[in-house]
Length: 395
Image (cartoon, rainbow, N blue to C red; front, side):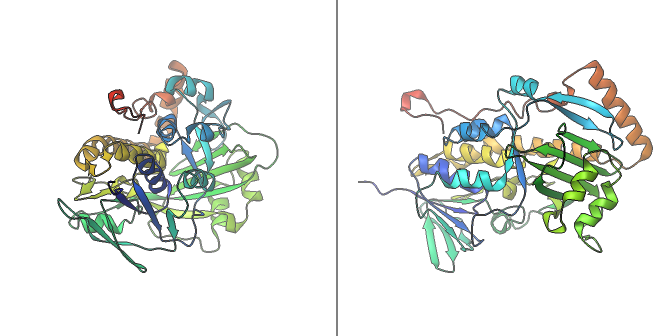
């Protein structure tokens, strides 16, 4: 009986766990190495568009996650005083792209992904380093405090500061500061209901979105030098920046505690990598193509990466050049689009902001559903299908 192919996944986040589940379904023996002491993620919420939900169908998780969709009515873009610049509708989005947009807590998604792996597949408190990416005739090697592992395939899902990326491509410039920082918080929804919205100001942005469990997810961004921190606490900083904006923003800030607020500078990969693989090692998610969050596609693209990698990873014969060919052009284009959107969202010039808002309002009146068109070619993506003659389903 042939020995099972072994895959080692470095990183137990969304992309790493999806890749592990997809590879497991293809017959790989999978080990996930997660540096943290538990899989409980650091973060707030994540949005999954129809493209990622179709990818999750590959591992049998799509319908479970679709059932958590909370946005049912209208939403859109507002000014800090509350005027609507553009409207979107959940039903129109679902009809256009073949499914809902689902916003859920990262912990919920992580739990759903981990449940699709066999017992013992995930090792927490297990930092790992790539010792050898492997090649023709030799396995890849990964070192851990508990010893060395050899693998027919290593999947590096170790995030925006990926050590594996630096090992594979030491001459690549890495990430750059995107020019803005973000704040995120999840808390019980205060007071009456609200229409989901993103609010664009001068060099600042706020978003408020409902979660299925009755809580809300709020996020904010502001153009600021890298490495900054509030002189007191980050909730107080949000009050200074957004406390005079329209309802329900002041109510949300009043209900928040300083410890509820997470702050992170945003970095992205401006110069695309030459490939997403080397030898028997593949990069995915932020390790391969970190992007600004302005399209909400960072986690979605990691999920896409995972199922496409598994599609090209037949046991004993992973085709990593095909994975690079499928993923590098798409993610490069989406990253560049996210950078352009960030420049538009976070304009600081008063004249530019006035022109932006007037143009958005006029275009929205003339062409309802304008905001949705920006996701054509992104949210309508579908995972690859293996030939039916092989007797295999989607992977």
